[in-house]
Image (cartoon, rainbow, N blue to C red; front, side, top):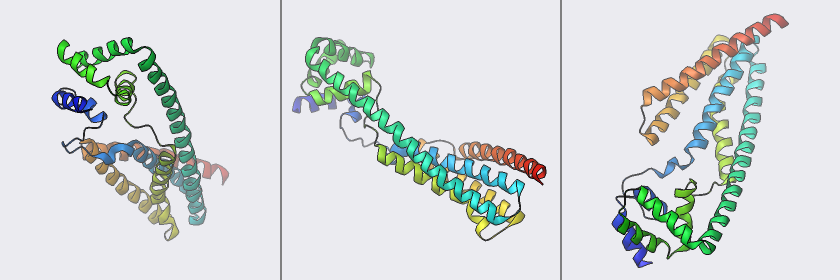
Length: 253
């Protein structure tokens, strides 16, 4: 194991992504909270856009704040449950597929060792290592089957370092959706008419800016660009939904 660690340190600067995957702690200031970024951003964005569009559609068809509030709360609850269940099923399926591929890879490491060594050597050579250094790294990697399998899972098969957690993904996705879907709804609990609608849209836009800033912080992106992108999409959804609501309201009236 000391040989493995020594060799790993030697090539760490050449193959940093792989070095991080097999357990070397990074000191470059990477942000671990980005691991659930997909679930949070996807759940929150869907909660903002779908519920503000729903509220806008209902508000286009009626001025009754109780009806709008009921529709918004119903959209929040139903959407959170749907998003949570969807995240659970998709993550569970991905985890099961990953487990099947890992079992196959472990079998190949034991029963097709020479072929796996050749594949591992090619992986490192493609990263720019010389033939001699690649052989040295492969020799060290092959001494630890767990790290070897982990390497092949990430570098050969393209899996992420950690398997998905279905329960955590479901909880995060559902809560992110519910928290975001709350913003378009709550103004109708104490306001009505144009004031409630304007507050609903304004609160949603402000929350979208906050989420965009957090997303930009994690991805080193541009806050203004990401905020504009999300607000523009939500604004389009509000305009179309409210227009359809008005047409339906006139038709029913």
